[in-house]
Image 1: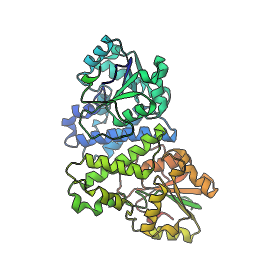
Image 2: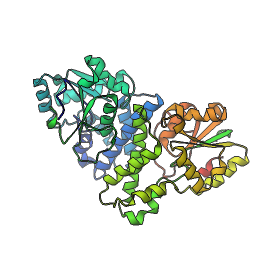
Image 3: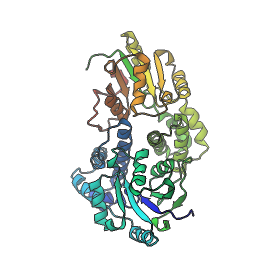
Image 4: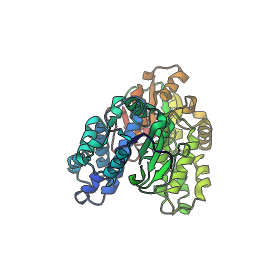
Length: 219
Length: 219
């Protein structure tokens, strides 16, 4: 275990908040296609962040989230599209993972500064932390909307340095998204990969300093 | 149908060459997981092109193709990893779609200049066109390796202008990858989307001028 860093930064969607909970919560009305629908929704959301960033055609994450859901529904003709509004409403109040409040309290107790760095726009992040009741636990909630490009562009990770006036070596970056860990490591942060599902590692040249099963291991 | 353009540029993998043919050709030895394996392989290959491009960490497409297959195999424990070398060898000699030679012959007959613009590195592209016997049909085979960044970065599409000394308005860009069509349209090319599978449209702000079922419609 490396030394404790003075600034601990969390990715939001997938890391603090379960992105599949929006669909899971409505699985009964969606039917057996719900898992596949949720996977397409997430995959398309990420594809759009990357391809539009490379084009220099940034659009806010909420708009991409809506479009990705539209594509997922169009590819799932067995799902009644009437669920669209319900799913989008659920996405504004995703479940936080159960160990999130305890993890944040522990970090504050040892004097760490804490932040979110997310692809989500400001309004999405405000809704997410409010509905999870964890808004008070962060020193900063940083959206890539400030630089109008998505992760893994280095300008997004640089927001942390700018916010805290710290060096890259002061930061532990925590994400469940392996590509996000890779981007943070490429930028110069130490990173922890939250691998809840126990999937195989990738991005071997951009390795996580820690691989953990839940946020309980983040100290 | 818009006016015929003087330069017609094709994406390679997925458009001229069937990327799933490497797995399909070996489906009997892979077993029932072969379709899923091929989908993960392709999805990871694309993810790596986008996330590494945004990091400024370009690596040649062949290396990413190998890593993506390793990840796909690691996620498919029911598949014997001994197929790895066979699949990689097959990827160097993918099937061209059957209408490719006729399409290229028609374009040459009307005096169009033709090119490939691909994420593939030079050696991959040389192998692909040689094994399909279509190398003589192109005025240029352009790899993004020249600019060390992947599509949808505009520097990749700019290679066409530089090669032919033409304007953007002289180019018809043809791709089966909807995100590639979007990137080409954002750059200023007219684009045709080859939608063989009849999947729903996306990237509404970056629309294709033509949506075709096969390359036969490209004139």
